[in-house]
Amino acid sequence: MNKPLILITNDDGLHARGIKKLIDIAKPMGDVYVVAPDRPQSGMSHAITVATPLRLNKIKQEENLTIYTCSGTPVDSVKLALDKVVPRKPDIVLSGINHGMNSSVCVIYSGTMGAALEGAIERIPSIGFSVLTHSPDSDFDSSEKYVKLIIEKGLETGLPEGVCLNVNIPTITEPEIKGVKVCRQAKTYWSDEYLEHKDPHKRSYYWLTGVLINPDKETDTDEWALENNYISVVPVHSDLTAHEAIPVINKWRFDA
Amino acid sequence: MNKPLILITNDDGLHARGIKKLIDIAKPMGDVYVVAPDRPQSGMSHAITVATPLRLNKIKQEENLTIYTCSGTPVDSVKLALDKVVPRKPDIVLSGINHGMNSSVCVIYSGTMGAALEGAIERIPSIGFSVLTHSPDSDFDSSEKYVKLIIEKGLETGLPEGVCLNVNIPTITEPEIKGVKVCRQAKTYWSDEYLEHKDPHKRSYYWLTGVLINPDKETDTDEWALENNYISVVPVHSDLTAHEAIPVINKWRFDA
Image (cartoon, rainbow over all chains, first blue to last red; front, top):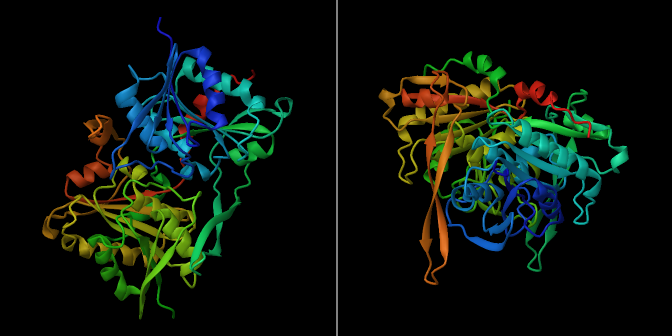
């Protein structure tokens, strides 16, 4: 029996600690191919590069581990890996471990989850992992046991077609983690405030800052799980249809 | 009574014909503020700029029409407009008219729809418009009547909270358009093929090309509507949860 083929990417770039941790966890489980952005790509969502070509750069090839950087986005990395790097369709696509939360509405802005969702669109079981701290020195050890377990389950069971998992891990020690909770995405939004600075020519430039607003207080959400020391797992798909709004819009009269 | 405040953006940049058409259509309906990317941003999805600051550049201010360019993505343009440009919360956010289809899975990659969805996340009725041709000389005249009608309905009726509309317009003459159809997003995916070229130093670079694959043959989809000469309208939201997959994943045993 062939070993599982595991494709790994992220959005913090190949030099981030999170992807090194993910590679270490995945290596004993199969043949690992890494195609990661050559520089940080946070906030790149599901962006693809259409107006310029892409480059691949082979960094390492050893037994069970092949590493490339890609000059594009996280989604570009998955697409290019599938067409040009892996010898066959991967058994699983892993993205992360991201330095920073990707729960609730953050999933929409996340390059980590863009890559995982691209795997799902390509009908490959895919999982994105994030820890709730932006620090480059994030401690990934406390979550290692759960990351390993979730990957094992993904390889063993697969996922419904077109579905990937958005896994967020609270920044607490392992004994404090109460377990894993399967959730829906909380209905949140960012209240943005751009900080205005002046350059030496007295012209303004603007830095994005913001606060996450969560009016969604139900207990079945990812935000609730994380606040209550659970690892949150949200199954995510690419169908953006607001199905419940179809009958509402159908009441509009369109006969011009 | 105040005139409606209309915020317009796109992903092809301020110099595209599509946004000029949208401005012309919207101008008689209210006070129009345009904040559009200063260069093409196709394929930017819901990307935001986090590692660099943004610039705003005022291009025009006349009665009922204020125009800025933004150095960021379509979503940046909406966020920055809401915080720094418009005098109050807009009554509607319009994005487009995009040169190229954004139906079915394309909605995920689309900067046009990223901007519209950002408006919806900010709880503003929002609509993205796209025509099914990439040509810079796209004929937007045949769709003008319907674009106007849909904006009027949006201003009059509003939209369910958190929902925006993804409007795609087939490239046929106005008499050939059979009407408007409210649809769900077809379950499609791209079969990618990267074309490999060599630079003068014999190093490879890769251009994204692909074919849209549509195994979803039901008649309630946007792809069906467009193939049958209807304008497709899909209500879109930011909840990526695959709700039907929650019980499936709940069967996984997570006790490590």
